[in-house]
Amino acid sequence: MQQNIYKILSQAQRQRVSDGVVTSIFDNCPVAFRKLILVLPQLGDFDSLEYIWWIQRDIERLKLAEIAVRAIGIGDRQSGEYFCKFTGFDPNWMFVDATGELHRQLNLYSGLTTKFPLLSSGQSAWINLMLMCAGIGSQGTLKEVFRGYRGDRLAPQLIGDQEIIKASPLPALKGSFFKWAGGSGFQRPFELATLRLRNMAEVLGNWNAYVPDASYMTQRGGTFLFDAQNVLIYEHRDRGILGFAANPSYPLSFLFTDPAARPNNQEIINA
Image (cartoon, rainbow, N blue to C red; front, side, top):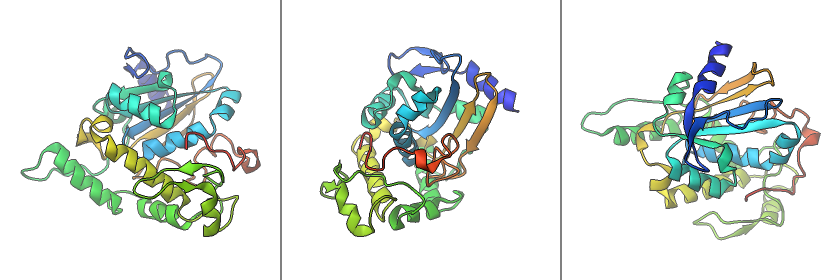
């Protein structure tokens, strides 16, 4: 099965966001590097934006560790361009799959797919998505939503004290504001929820760009890490909305296990 995963990914030809060329998602990956492949849901999905936020936060560590990152998300090239501009993710590393075909080949969780009479596939997907947001057919979603509001002392501080966060409809907030919610040096109450609100505002303001076809909104993603010999050494398959990481407190803990080695908590990239 592990070899099948590498075979599927290595044979996948998808459109690269930077230049529109359809090519292997492993194109230009240094041979000696480990390869971190992120198969993302719709590019307007909470999970896609939040996962790449964590990648960007640790991007220099990933480079120093000789880990090549490639991401494939559901959408078209315009979706990818908006996504990369907002997150700061390198468009040379970003590929798009218009229909989630790669996700199905990898047997990733499709989410709820109930077809409702008299409704289009996109309209049915909306209802299924709302049910998943309520925790139906979406393992761990409600718990993760609440974590974003209540805070998490096992997670690092997410917003630097001097950072300005614009998350409509809230007024612009300075990072030091969150000290009043509980202190510093860890994920404070409402801190993650504010970042998620900012992501939601970005997507809703550019909906047609991020979600050109709503039919695939419930499709979940997965994470696959290969060593330099292309042997699969880690995988995670999402089981619900906001389920992109086995360890939500620090989603990249499968790469960097020493909490003390995390970047300075006052830093934040692309906030």
